[in-house]
Length: 317
Image 1 (tube, rainbow, N blue to C red):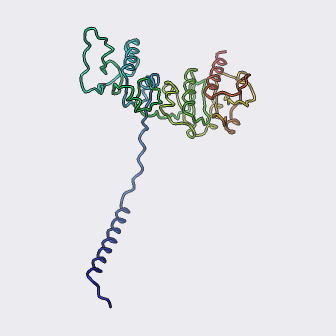
Image 2 (cartoon, rainbow, N blue to C red; image 1 turned 90 degrees about the horizontal axis):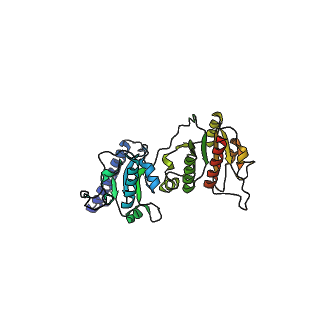
Image 3 (cartoon, rainbow, N blue to C red; image 1 turned 90 degrees about the vertical axis):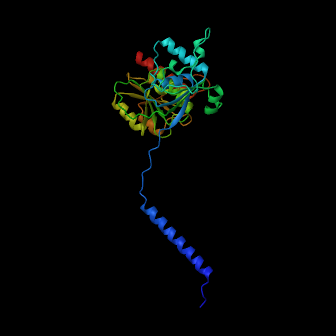
């Protein structure tokens, strides 16, 4: 029998130690308590553009983090506050502060007060930072039309209360995904005093700076419902006394002649696909816009504005 050498014994000890360490590691992993995944934090985003940011600052549902302004945008907001008297903006707390590491200089003889930038002159409940336009370009990207103002905030939580109460005009989107279109449609919905703006949980865009800029403040001014099943929501609207009108270029009736009653819900489909089959089968009527020209279709946001205008005229008649 071959006699074991010192080298053999050394490698045998290493192998035993490795197996022992591996067994201990596996045992520790089995004893490790299993934790549930943490709920994801609210999504933070940047809103930009004067009307978009101003509306967000006035919305008590908004969680505000930081407000970045150029000097021109600061002066513009100050002038709006001065014109409004005490200001209709959100009252600020004691944490208002500019990012400057020095005291704001007092106005010198002959110097306009608009040349100084104390945070106390703007009533916002958010830290204020004066920046150069190129800093906003760096944060938002060179393509963003920010108008010298940007707000770091969190996306609004979608609402799920489908109690339509005394509502009389509602707009529903059937899987429209383009954020520019959704924002522009939301703007029209607010302009024509729609009570609800309804989208589906799937195949609808999340809130972004692009969508908010297209909405021009409308995100803050309308009840936005996220629904799981659009057809079920349409049935609820029928029970609540609504006539639901699906807008489609191949509709059976002209929109103007399709209205009946004073409670109207307009449904818009995605460009290209149009209304889904289930939606077409569920709405009260499928209608079309009268377009006598050579082109027989419109961008969906333009079609939405026309349909909402026609619905308002019908309700007022």
